[in-house]
Amino acid sequence: MRFVIQRVTEASVTVEKEVIGQIEKGFLVLIGVSDEDTKEIADKMIKKLIGMRIFEDENGKTNLSLDQVGGELLLISQFTLYADCKKGNRPSFTKAGGPEMANELYEYIINECKKSVKKVECGSFGADMKVSLLNDGPFTIVLDSADLS
Image (cartoon, rainbow, N blue to C red; front, side):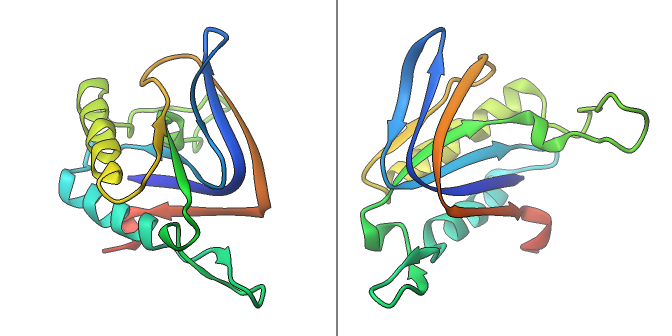
């Protein structure tokens, strides 16, 4: 599982010219699910995401977590995080989780995040989405479940 976490001052997702998710200060998280991922792996990733201390404290140090700043989440499914570009110029996506399984884990992540974050918005799995954000910093972190083992 891969999360691309971007600290934002605002972010939104649009499908067919309609805004379906919008947040202010918080994290925009692009979520890639592989065919080997499980709910147990998702739980580890969620715990790391929620506890990530990348907001500035009163001294300008990145020391505060999402809950400490009243931050919000915008969660977007993105199978292209599992693009394999080793051969040729056209990426392969065979390592991405199948749609049914990946959607089930994506929905699980959304529901679990809602248990500890006051505002959680999301995209539409499999839809053609337009994502807008104002990256704060810029601050972007790639979190890969393979690194958490």
